[in-house]
Length: 178
Image (cartoon, rainbow, N blue to C red; front, side):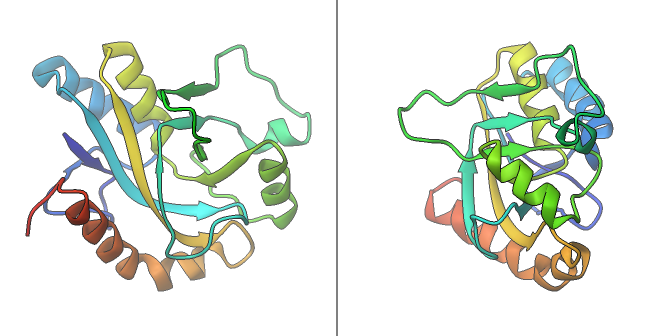
């Protein structure tokens, strides 16, 4: 099953599950309870912490839920906040998820220092629900912006083309037709 966030990030080949960690987790849980998909593939936009360039298409099976307060040692969590379904020996790009979009170059550098490459609001929720239900999962992302002061402006400017690139990528992999 191919999933997407929703709102302005929809695709005719994907099921929207909602924006952010909470709505996407609730919606996907409902889907898994009624349909139990064989595989979950999340498709969406992402911000880069600097290593990946705008319009790069990234595949990943590894995610984290690291909030900005953690970077400055103002917060901690008792939960396991990294999930990986990666089985190959290649290095996977780690995707961070939060209900907030990073707009600080300093934070962007801190995330990169932790080995995290990109951010997408929903991916951790997708991977966690998949883990609970025992469903293999992964994600495909197109970089729309860097996580700096221009993040929103660049996202708006690049979002439409990113959706085209994501569709083309899935076609090239034989996951969709059209």
